[in-house]
Length: 426
Image 1 (tube, one colour):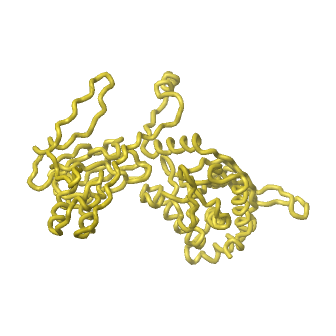
Image 2 (cartoon, helix red, strand yellow):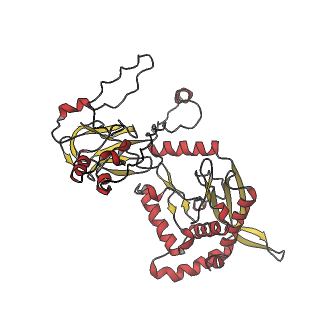
Image 3 (cartoon, one colour):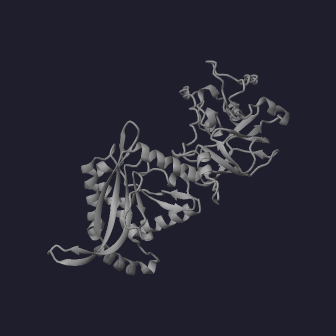
């Protein structure tokens, strides 16, 4: 029977996407692994591969269509010997009926597919069925990894004859509701308020919707508290200048932010209890220092993650950060490059911001807001008034994960590492 191709979830936060471009047309033959479409997620545009083989019978979603829900049918694939006339037996994408209408009658049942001994229907691609027959495999003994538990080529290729029955997959979870938008007046109300004023209405793209929903959720559900310290940068700036002269021949130029990232990564090892994330009903304490860094892009932001940052040299961190930031601005990051971490650095010092309070990026336990280094009068250790370059930082902390004293200990370690950079790298 015809096989539906479903809108994939290409990132952990994706709930809907835009079908940016079809790479196939109706009548084309595709095999497992062939690129069939470009999907714009909330973070990037990514290529989508086929998991089955067959002929493209019908494209259900036109190019450029926005707001296509994850797991919604986007195309129909025909098996060998089938034609477009058979597509009528494939379920069409469900459309919500208006509230005033009677519920639509249940669709006529499609022809039954082979069933397992316990009566449960087996879903498998044509290629998977053919390989299973060649290898004399019982499909009821194989757990599918395709959409909705469908058995695909990779599942039967890795299966062994006579293998023990696989544990029945749990029922597929219902697609989560679209991300809630920030609380506030409804659009119609706001439009009335400004009806006599000139304005341009800017449509929200997937990234801006996700940023709005996640940050609203973060402020509403995470018990933030804030810790502030001033950090003297003169020793770091002198050390940085010396290193940059030595690294000039290699084309490496270290920024203050590179030192901040390193200082935070080392501090998470010095205060391991703070290297943690909130996991709903438990806390996960991480071993490596995986530090996310906020990168502003047009229409939103990314937080690419520098993994094992405590073990990397400053020059390695600097090169990796420049690469991640460049690809973030080009929307070329893969999901594994901006997912994870336990701690975030957000630096607005280069924009002249003295200090600010950052919103925690869930499920992280904390985020460090970094301001500009500014020359200020300070009282020296000998009691005399002097001038120093001072950077103000604010640590936003999730109180469910990190208590006040622990947060203060973490911030003290960050301050110590930045004010004594040579010792930090020893």
